[in-house]
Length: 86
Image (cartoon, rainbow, N blue to C red; front, side, top):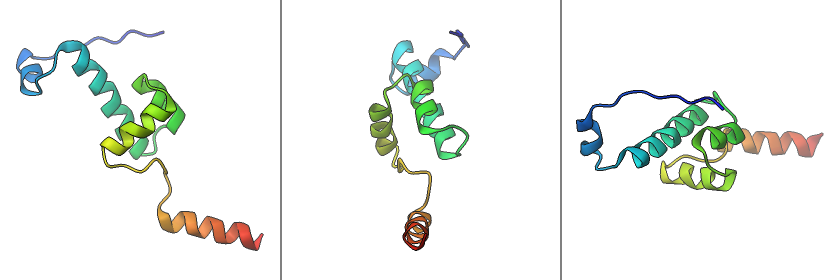
């Protein structure tokens, strides 16, 4: 396991009203959600980065207003249509 550490100004923690442990946990989740949104990582890998189970990560996506699907609704419909023709 790799340990990553960095310094944060104390004011940043007080502005979000979080203790260092909560801030670090939320930062991991936010990064994983963003990387998933950008399609840089899979859902499973993003959950791992966030330190969450896959189900918990899906819940986190909902809190951020993101879909657990990396395809748009139109792409899903198109895939389903192609599968039915296949």
